[in-house]
Length: 352
Image 1 (tube, helix red, strand yellow):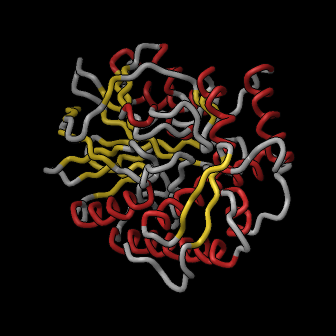
Image 2 (cartoon, rainbow, N blue to C red):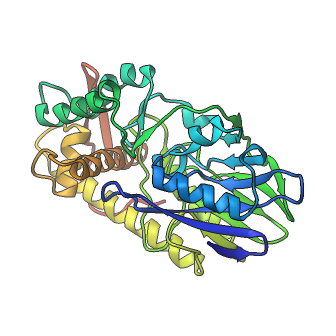
């Protein structure tokens, strides 16, 4: 455990499952005597992570009954232990926009509504039993493992009760007065926290050192990548002089360099996706475009390959939506599946 600033502690959690996101930094601000304490995010839903957080809370003398947990967004590495802490009396806070859909390709929400929504979402991106039987089979095998065999899987998120968070909402813990700030992009409703006086910014997954955060969706007209570019510029302007504490990889010391690196990476990926669509003989599904853009030549066999495919499909969807908004591609629907084709040759980078 590290004290990153006066009264702000960081605990690193590591997942023992798969090759996806392998670590996360959980931040804690103990309250003054008798008052509530804050924990930012809840980590992986694994027994080892729960045991470590129990030790951390005990060391900081924070009872779970006096613990508030600010969930920056609804991904498995941030919300995996949320339900476990809620059952023990912790209060949870999250932007309700994170729950606007029951099913998303990026995580597995264990609820009946999610299963009802899954088939439609998969068909939207071109994953069906008829057109992509191998990929469809992998999704169905996972459904059986989690819902029927009740297998514990790190990417599963159990439902949990929470109080809604609004932009600008104030949270006071210890010596800090924190305000919630929208960080659209990595997810639709991701939020961070900042203290304007003490110049501390909890950046969640919006900006990371050496990692390009995934901007992924499988739902139309969310304008997620456009929102991400705008958010990055806002972050660079507002938090330049702050201690920036992201959820992965440690503090960011050169904010402008990190922002520019992420924006450049997405512009390069837009180039790749744009050229795939331009060079195609006809309209393509998201799944077909993702496979071409990322060089995926076979159906996933392992869980790691499956997770990679889920990620690149979601990321490619966001890129296509951005190119659609900019007038480079058009989309059409046939029997619930979206098809994309170029409106004009893609010969260079789009403006952001």
